[in-house]
Length: 320
Image 1 (cartoon, rainbow, N blue to C red):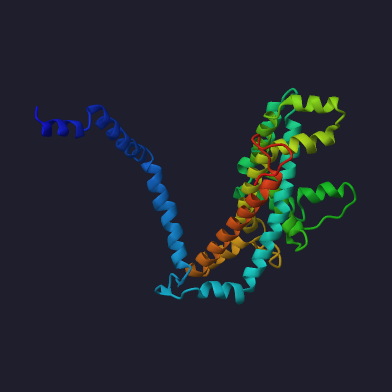
Image 2 (cartoon, helix red, strand yellow):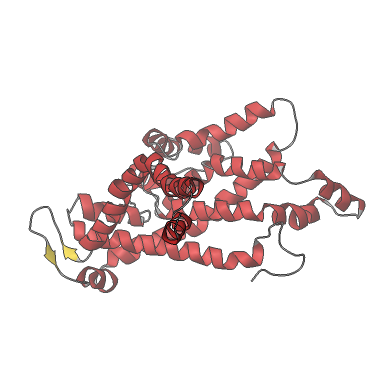
């Protein structure tokens, strides 16, 4: 064997190395093949409509006229000459600020009660969780409207105590409160997540704190809340995102009334898109909502380093 043949033999990859690189090349391809149904669905049904709506937001696009590029004129009109935008945004912010804390508090309190080992606890957990499965349906919204109507069961209950009832959903001062109450009533999913988190807290912590003289209130604020803070963080973000997009209850129960007291942002977006057919303007409204949700999520994420604690955190030190 001459020198050139030896050099070529050394330069050629061995069968073992060749199969290794081949498997490394084919592995990602196989992975993409397996996730291709989801990937195609995401690109076609989510990513494409998302960026298409962004393009529409810079156009004057209606179903009656050809599309025209108008730049940022839709956004300028929204922020400078649209009083309904201000009204709907104000109602939505009030709804978010009121419903999210109340829903989290109710879910946590009920989860703490249901975390006790008592007879028939499985039935109670199922019964309390069940309303969250149907809470967003049109049927429940219609039922809620009847409950808080003039002849509803709520007025009959308070009449027993000598309180005169009224139509709570047609009163501008109480209409939004009925929608908030409906949202708080739908705490089942949040409660289940809190319940799972409570089960992960070691009982030794409570026993040791009891030996040191800590009562139930001190244990709640010094043990339960810090240990549940990652779950509280997750539930808070999900509740805020869902609250910003609330539509069905306001549309079915009050239709935005009375006097626009429940005219939430999603209803205004719906009106522009499917009543006036101003799809370009509605797309701009949708992107403003998206930016608002992202901003709220980033704000919560930024502040989480001060109140969310993980097992890897060192005691007494804030995460940077």
